[in-house]
Amino acid sequence: MSEELEKLEKQIEEKISNANNLEHLNSIKIEVFGKKGLITNHLKLLSGLSENERKIKGKVINDIKNKINQLLQEKNKTLNDNEISKKLEKEEIDITLSPRPFDEGKLNPITQTIAEVTTIFQKMGFETALGPDIEDDYHNFTALNIPPEHPARQLHDTFYLKNNSKLLRTHTSPVQIRTLEKIKPPLKIIAPGRTYRADSDMTHTPMFHQIEGLSLDININMSHLKGCIMDFCREFFEIDDLPVRFRPSFFPFTEPSAEIDIGCFKDKKEIKIGNGGSWLEIMGCGMVHSKVLKYCKVDSNKYQGFAFGVGVERLAMLKYGIPDLRSFFESDIKWLNNFGFSIFENIEKI
Ligand code: PHE
Image (cartoon, rainbow, N blue to C red; front, side):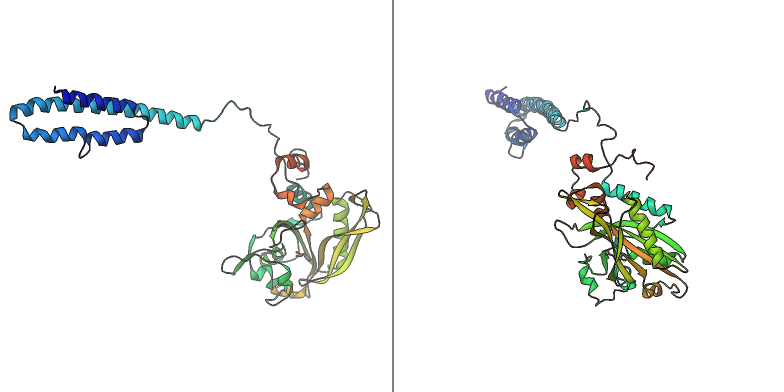
């Protein structure tokens, strides 16, 4: 073997042995076997030799070529294995970590409150109904006697979807319409769900929860509404003599309309629910407007009824002394462990 080739072989072997990643190894491969590679150049020179010389030198170069190829393959495997184990090390999952206690997660007070409210109404004969979060203008407004230019639309801070034909419901009242389109009265339904308004500050979150109630039958009047709501408030807050007051108000979809206040008082700096001389507004209600019944093709001479809507967050804050509205949606496990409810404790309520 010529001295020159021997030197070249050593040089290439050293390069390969020093390669410390696959990319580097690849560049060596090109340097050796590429178009103008170190070995390729020698192979090219063979054509200028005599037949005899070509045979001898050709064999030498071929042997070197095979040897280097073998080295490249071995090195490739080593580097590949290294890279895989490095990757695995990084992605390691520690399966020795002890499992979290089964009951660590808690029900959000919102879930708990919805369960409590619907249970109370279910005992009065109301059935649960649901409607979509993405509504159309007709069900959220028009059929509730809020025509296109009505100022009440501005009060709702509506989130409109892209082409304005759909929106995120601003209240659960559209479930009244959707239910009446499917079921004919007499009926009593309770409809919990998410509602949305483009409003965000200390006392508003863009997504919140409401529970809607609707009761339609022959001979239903305002006293049925009063009795139903008073019973509900006293049972929900677990105070038998809780004062409940109906204050005249306005909603386009009820006539007459009222706002419901419950008794409260200040204890040190905290607001407590009960008989204490002050009032706190908790929900809206009224007798279903005859125009709403007309939109739903219900004969308003035969059927009348009442409807109400209540904010779930407000109920939960008052009942469980939760000071900040925004904390409901922060998913802070410490907060949830403090204010949340065990699934098992409350199984009979749900
Ligand atoms: N939808 C009303 C609101 O969001 C509440 C309400 C419901 C009032 C049903 C009257 C009757 O404020």
